[in-house]
Amino acid sequence: MLFSVSGIEVSPWVPPLVAFVISVFTSMGGISGAFLILPFQVSVLGFTSPAVSATNQLYNIVAIPSGVYRYIKEGRMAWPLAWIIIIGTLPGVFLGAILRIRYLLDPKHFKLFAGLVLFYIGIKLIRDLVSSNKADKKQTQVEEKFKEQVEANQQKNRGNQTLGRETASRVVVNQFSLTRIVYEFQSQTFDINALSLMALSFIIGIVGGIYGIGGGAIIAPFLVTLFKLPIYTVAGATLMGTFVTSIAGVAIYQTLSVFFTHTPAAPDWALGFLFGIGGFAGMYCGARIQKFVRANVIKWILVFCIVFPAAQYVWQFFR
Image (cartoon, rainbow, N blue to C red; front, side, top):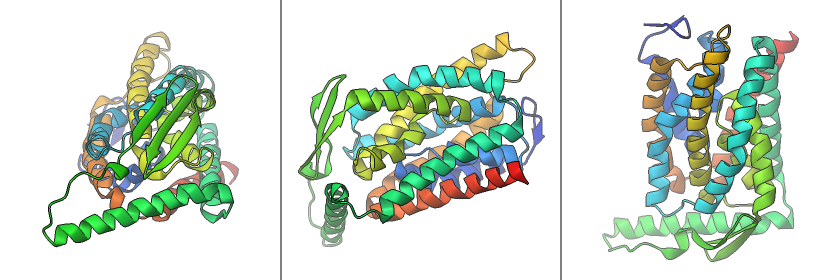
């Protein structure tokens, strides 16, 4: 099948299959999988114009709602985190889209940029996994307690006992303003400086706008490593943030394509929807099984998925 916008030819079953496999794993950590689908489009399919970023964000729009639905249904959507991420990343995504079209047209330099971004995220995750600092104990204890509760509920289900919703397994918001977010999970309280998170979201939004992943995806590792939040409460918020900013990103690229007629900027709608269909199914599955997977396992999956394409991109630049 030939896709006219991207100029590539590929069997129609390949994009949804690739997206499904990737999103099953990444959605457990609050990442849509777009950051791995972009390397597939660039390196395997040969889609290297700025339109690939817009197509990647179109994938997010189609794929993410199923994962968000699961996290909302299970009561693990931290809405204040999602709104602050959205407020911070939206202007950054706009700026990033302009930078992508005007200054990062060379695929070789774009690959180096993407590789360095992924490397940084991977290093932050690895440091979090091998760290034994006291500051990490609260986060670890909450994650382990949640996992134990899920296992206990499984045992009750096997015994055909009637289960009610456990309030300790849900996110309870105590305070939300533009300066402070306070919420409880597993009887532990988490206090976040909203202004710091907003500033970080803006910077990450720029990177996300350039890279074509909406910005919200990149922030998930920072919430885990810098803000010490349990990954079981982060995933839904970052996916929601990615969804909203991706809508803005696609609209921005589509608009810019009118002014930058010499450069393909609008998304390849057919290709983006095919990736999105596979991602929709994969994210639902990933969000559904996340609570059965240990936090460290999820983080190591993300480390592998991030470092592998990063190393490949940097190597391709210097060889």
